Length: 179
Image 1: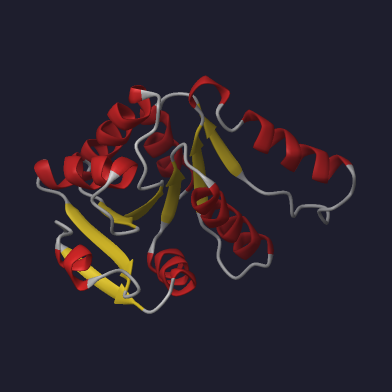
Image 2: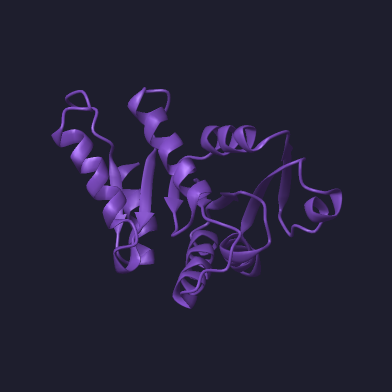
């Protein structure tokens, strides 16, 4: 299975998020799955991809050519896919991955999560997404999704299916249960 991990290239203030990103990368690799991610070796992205590589995992980095050649070539990955834009990166990752895990992140991470939810709602894909929600990081987002449903903004049966994980290992386990 190809598991895409959505996360940022920033270093979070909470060190636990970086440690959990590494745990996720190791778990994906040791389970024999392929990690697909945004291609950076910095921050959360670097933590998840570096840990997967250290365990002998297969890592596919998808990076836009808008970054300098020096940055692109500095990415330690098994396979490097170059795309022309951030939108094309998102499209490639969603198309080529079987399931998704979103770690705590910023606007870009949220954008990727929403793109998967929209594609699922429009029945363009039927792929599982897990949100790693330590310390309630995604609680307000999940509450907003619930409010949308309560107010009739989803057709019956079209409510987004999101696995809400409090523990990092539950994210990967949850993907198995829905495949």
